[in-house]
Image (cartoon, rainbow, N blue to C red; front, side, top):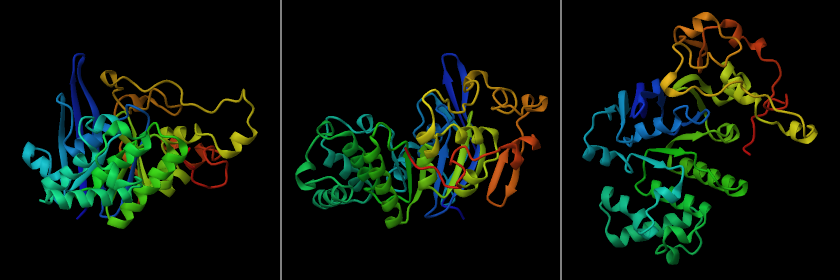
Length: 346
C-alpha cells in the first residue's frame, strides 16, 4: 500500500468572477522514502495541490476525489482530525517564511508548538529538542537565538527555521513548496542539500514543488509535469529529462539555457519560448489545456481531454497526437547541450 495516494483529486475555487477549477483529475502515489517533484509554470496548480494535501485550502476552495494516507481517507475529515494529521504525519515548508512565521512569537515557541501538541512533550524537553533542531538546520548559537523573533533572521535563516518547524514532530511526508524562493544561489543550494540530507536521515517521503527544472532534476526520483491543473506527463526523473514526450514538457526544457549556450551565445540570441500564455482558469480550452499553444494540435485536441498513454512502465503522457510524442519530433537536447546531463539548478 502506498504511503500517500491521491485519486482523481479536484480543487474548485469560488471567485467573484465565477467558479474555477485549479486542479483537475489528479492521481499519483507516493511510497515511503520516495521523492516526487511537481513542476510547471505559475498558475498550473502546484501549490493548490499541496494545500489540498494538507487540508489547508482557502475558505473559497473545495476538494473532491480522494486523498489517502496509510489507507485513511483525509478528504472529509473534521478540523480536529486534520490537526492531528498536520505536523505529526504530514508537514509543509511554505513558499515564503516571513508570512508563515508569526512575527510576534519567538521562533523557539513556534518550533516547539508541534512537539507540545502532537508528542505531549514537556516545555523543557521541547526546548531541548528545539535547540537540537536549530543546530541541525545550521542556525549558529541556537541556545541563544531560540528566543529571537523572525525579523531578527535573514531570509535563508528563516527558511531553515521553517524546515526545523516542519520536522519538529517527525512527520512521514514532507511537502516543500518552492522552498528556495527569493534566496541567492549559494543559500539555495545549502537549503536544498539540507532538505535532502534530512529526508534521507529520517526516511521521510518528499514532495518538492518548484518551477526550477534544475532543482527538480537534482532532488527527486519521479516528476509530475502540470499544466492548466492537469498532469500532462509523469515518470522517473531520468525519463522525463532524457526522453520528454509532451510538447509542453519539451517546451519547458528547451527554454532553459544550457551551459554551452551561456558560454557562446551572443547577447542578441533569444532562447526558445512557448508561444502564447497560460489560459485563464475561467476560460480553459474544452479539450487539452495546452491545445491553444501546441504546434501539433489537431481538431480533436480542442474537443476532449486526451487519454493517458503509457510509454514505459514508469513513464506516462496525456497527449492524443502520435506525431507530437514521437521521439523524432523533438530534435536536439536543447536543455542539456546535447551531453545527456540533467540540468543544474540555477
